[in-house]
Length: 635
Image: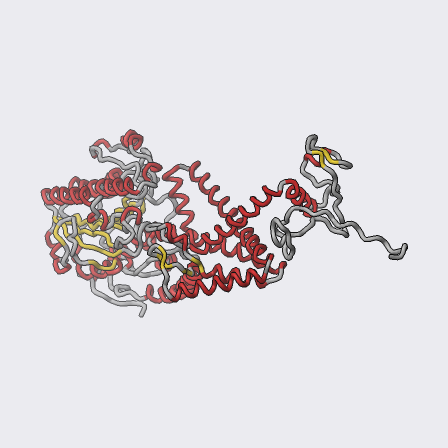
């Protein structure tokens, strides 16, 4: 070699494997770089004295601080990468453990996300062993892309999968509590209702901590899912040919098992749940948007929209009519083997007590438009005669002129109309739709006692306040009332107890009862306790209402009471119907004679085989039974 030719530089020293690098070979980690320095911008190596923790030619302070020797300060990403490589050189075994751990965790996280949603009730561990078809597609895409596009696609795909995971988790929660899936268009505002419910049940501090925890988990989920997807993409890209072969084999196995319907522990081995969940949400959004226009037209058509005032409920003139909804009073309370014995005894004893006071009752079943919650959908469906099973329909009806059953009484001019709403704690514009002259909310009933979890006051007090403020006063017209009782609202702890009616006062008498009751936190996550306490709450509400009628009812009182929906599936069961009991009670025999052809059961407990109607059918049947003449409007 000529003297003027520079001699070749000595080879760079080798370093332990860099597991994230591609296209190289290393004995410890195949495919990792053989050295961590560059000929163009070398990072000098220095001898390390392990006994004293210093390096030759570099201050000990920087080495102790974890900085790479010879790397100038302020180099940002390059400096951090140098530190990482230095750490890998010094601790190759630990680096290998971390590499495998993060890779396995990434795969597990993505695998679980692709298996959602799964049912909370009836969940089996074998469901986590199934093979998601989407994983094969993801692997094929990431393998085929060059490095930089792959990182971008992986990060965006991971964020998208995180978003789908959040929606899937909400879908699972809604299915467990409300018996339906999460609606991307309509249900976001219900999350605030859920937070308020938790605040009332568990306290503001606990709820704030839970809310903060959920937000942190959501942020961590997005970051973790994006990082996991990038990690998997990096591993696949290290040896594209090998990854392609493995992906082809995996795809062949998935298709074969899918065609042959191979099962593992009674569950299909192959699934495509993520794609199915995405399609379901897309269909749900499309159907929601279509339903808005269709339901608007339906709401404008009203069988009694043009009925003259004189032809509305003429057979109830002179009667005080009370429509009462009992929170979560569902068919399960009467027929479930855990709750039914106590509730049925209460219904039987209440029926006997009412008969002794001169009242008779008939009872049947209605199928509610909601399940487990969203009580206002049940109220509005019953009183509007329209099937209102989502928030969009509810808003449409509340803004319409569609005749509600309660407004029909006001339209006649023959009744004063009033609402007693102990669960309402803010403005309630729905008052106009329901045609109520006056509404008493939670702050207008004079209650000074303690809250019972979500319920602002015991039902017995709310009924006594109704008697004191409204029903017991002299008036020129009979009264039509809508009352919403709340003591049977979840979490069913603590539950009020009946006290002497003359001792109710301002409600302070319930203080010791509330303190002695069970705490919501002891019941809310215990299925057996929830079912037992739910049954007790229904017994309390029915007892309070029927005792009020015995004590304050007159010859002209007509009581219609029903449940708004079944309790959540944790109490009613995963396959429970949406049926709720309904009863009409009156002292005047002519009132019940008008519904003799309905086939309802005598007494407060409807028979198992009693007729079942959709809740939306009640308004028209009631109006017709009591002499109303149809005059349609709106098409």
